[in-house]
Length: 256
Image (tube, rainbow, N blue to C red):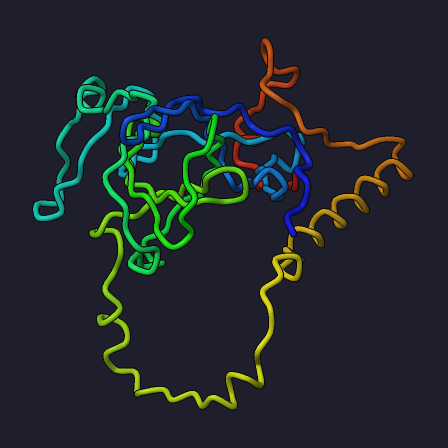
């Protein structure tokens, strides 16, 4: 069972699925979301203002703004300067088209290569075979990704695949592990069914309850929350921080 989305679905990427002899319009949506996760900001304990990160020179510790990208040369412990326009020149322009490479048995795809899932809503029928999947290529954020396509309900589940160099060889980690034998009785004893509803983020739930208790406590004692989550400031700050305030100890403030 899949929970109904708590927020409107993100704007889809529109494009085409190019099949043999026919091209179908499609819409592509992310299949997962992190919008319900809690996250922290760093705040100044004296002013209650949010702290921002700065680019700091690794050796001198001084803030610096005139920075460029650099590629590390591990052998020499130095860097090669990369001009801002140079990476742009090798980015791939999106054609908004899923290009089909071929069809393979689903069992041939090693699950370690599965990366990010997407929902693909086609305009018309496209896939029916549940035992074979389609291998395709798609450009997302100017980077080309190999993608596995398989039927899911009325649409298609597209999962980007890791490249071979991104997947580590298990032999490098399991060589010293003795052979493990699991009897049939042991398997049947622990036999169950997979239910995603059973896997809940208790950490997120506890943090959310903690925030709600603190908000309620502030309202009862001070008539309101004393430290507010502030967005981007417009104009100069009301109380420019001095040298002492810049060195003030920072602590974490949870934003649900």
